[in-house]
Image (tube, rainbow, N blue to C red; front, side, top):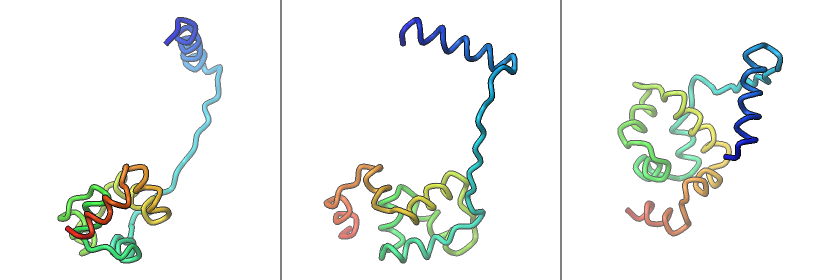
Length: 106
């Protein structure tokens, strides 16, 4: 990081501390409940395949589907993304088509 960027950052921090800047606030809304079973079934995956592809423990997926546990906020965010665009999530996680086939075949 250059000296100019550091100085600019410090100036912005001081201005913010003095109340001279406006911070844009943005609220995101994530549902309190996520239908994990429905998301998984839309993808035609077993619980094990779903957990392996997206990095959840198999036990967590089972508990969520049984309703004995509720996913934490971070898991609900990921589950929401999986529901909206599973291929994007797979690409973001670096899963290739070959990786997905390996997971599906065990």
